[in-house]
Image (cartoon, rainbow, N blue to C red; front, side):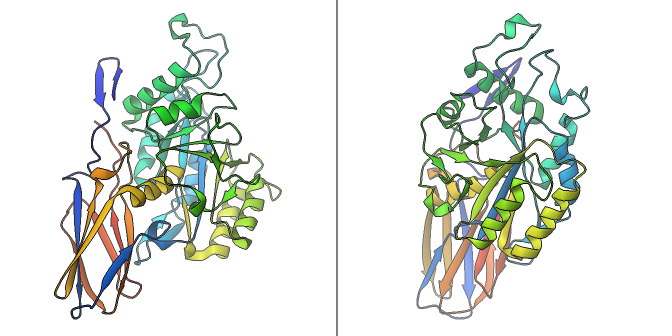
Length: 371
């Protein structure tokens, strides 16, 4: 699919290519020849057992307050390397009443282009939340009286690509307007988030409290995600109930959205509580990062071959159907009867980490800019 915006032309589809070809080769060396070796993708990246996924809607300045805490709060990759907590930002392009750019710096409660772009290296994901949030208003430009939601969806996709250099993979349904989930599915997005609007698609999780198990999400190219939401950043907010249920129950993830977190005091306490209760077992990231890992591990082609005291694991990304991947990360857990002495990779554009005790291997790469 090609997107034309002004004079700029972007080709955004094609085979999944993580930079220098379709495949990665991982060579694992053992102390002596193993009798057998197998590898498997853990259910979550870095072999974590729980996940909290979050985003701010409407280009909220609350993102910056949150990142003051998140950029200094960490989980590890299971191999001794820290990863800061991160989340997503759902964007509208313009005010549907006066047509002013939300992110143009004219509104003190909105994140500017520069501020959002600066946070991409800290794990920020950017989402499509419709060009205009609402179908009505006194928009002074009649040439932008677009069909709602069709034109608003496609123009917002192009806007994000042009202004942020980012090809989004996630929709957040504005309010409860119908049609957006199907547009996201038909435009090759990975998932769409809403509290209750799914356009006839089966939402996951299905529970009223929006807690779920990743094992219950089937292998599919598009998923409608049911999220919870909170603008009540006190101890009575929905975020605290969701955390309590996640810690005490058998479910392993929830997604929460918000418009703002005030001065951040209660948000910071919530983050501290996540760390104190779940330690290094939890991911705190965007739904895009979470679902891209799930998508890759289900569709990448993995092969293994043993040669003496080493095994070569090949990961072929060309079989991955989604073409808008930002996080190419994958984790592997090895099972063998011999100790690992070394792991190497044939790609300089990927980072590699491994743990010889747990036999966890991670390959890491993120694409943050589409030219």
